[in-house]
Image 1 (tube, rainbow, N blue to C red):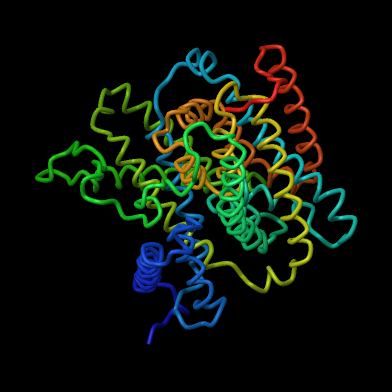
Image 2 (cartoon, rainbow, N blue to C red):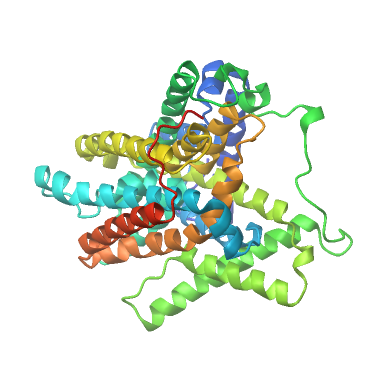
Amino acid sequence: MFNVDTFSPWVLLTDLGIISGLLLIGQLIRAKVKIIQQLFIPPSLLAGLLGLAFGPNGLDFLPLSNQVGTYAAVLIALVFGVLPLSSPKVSAKEVAGRVGPMWAYAQLGMLLQWAFAGLFGLFVLKLIWPELNDSFGIMLSTGFYGGHGTAAAIGNAYANATPAWEEAQSLGMTTATVGVVCAIVGGLMFIKWATKNKQTAFISDFAQLPNELRTGLIPRDKRESSGDVTTSSISIECYTFHMAIAFFIAFVGYAISVAVKGYYPKLELPVFSCAFVVGLLFKKFMEVTKSNEYLCTKTTQRLGSMFTDILVACGVAAIKLGVVVKYALPLIVLIVFGVVMVCFIVFFFGKRLSKTYWFERSIFAWGWWTGTMAMGIALIRIVDPKLASKAMDDFALAYLPIAPVEILLITFVPVLFINGMGLELMLGCLLLSVIIIFFAHKMGWWIKKEKTK
């Protein structure tokens, strides 16, 4: 009935139609099934799992094409392309003065996870399974800290490398999927412990969470605007305008990546990194020409979230189960190590770098550093329904100087590992972490006494 062997616009429509249908089914399941609500499993992940189970990599019932995994690489370029457009404009002085400890905490969370995972892969997993790729360890942080988007980006980089490592994307998507489950299940366990031991400042029972956060359906009296209409539909529809900007930025990023590879075949610049830089330049151009008032940050945020939902569904559906089975044992060992490692990083440093509301800040970090930022938001809304701790605001400000470091890591981790310099990079991350800890001590951010709120 459907010919998916030869790619065409109709195959694209078929893929998007099936993924869209699965997203709707995922939301229906979230709205109706209590256990799914209690676990806060996002519909995008449910859609991906359904696509994996019933698609070509599972029961082969759904006629998805072999391009579903490629869509994830395209979508991550769109996500990173619009990211600068929705970033708030704040001064470096404000960031340093208000959220220094949070910056140290968040930066350590990133660097230590990459460093420990990479070194564990090189010195422990490779010792037990010598045939493993040197990059196997970083598949943990690719999925846990990075999420499905980073898994798509790094997987695409390895797929286009010489020699190619096609299995990287499936491994990264697998750890990202497991990470979301760990974020939810582990997060709820930690919240139960914290409420029982009076470590939470705003609630005494996590069952107080509003119903709309469980079902995902917002009642009429609690709905908010999704953005401002900045262009007249008689000229160009507002969503068309913002969508055009997003696709133009991603396209220019892709063109730059292709052009650089054409001139320097050994230099593979990831499309998403190029798109991010183009997005920064485009935002600056709009500010200089004073046309940025027609750019709605809420709309660009919604577009980024939309691209991410589709990305997760496509990425999980494209996981090759044969790869997961092939690496099942080292993958299990890596994930168990990762859960213990992230738990230590989150709560050890969370207590020592949070002057107030240490648990609220830590539980947000747990959700973010194992699953996604959305998981972190879901968890903090349980313990801090009115967001009175300002943890999310501080994380948002702290992330501004962290974002360039994250982009550089995602860009150069595959390049350096492929060229045999992975050990040097991981040791560099470890050294930088030690410097940050020393700096936190010097600045008086490090707290030695136990925090109770």
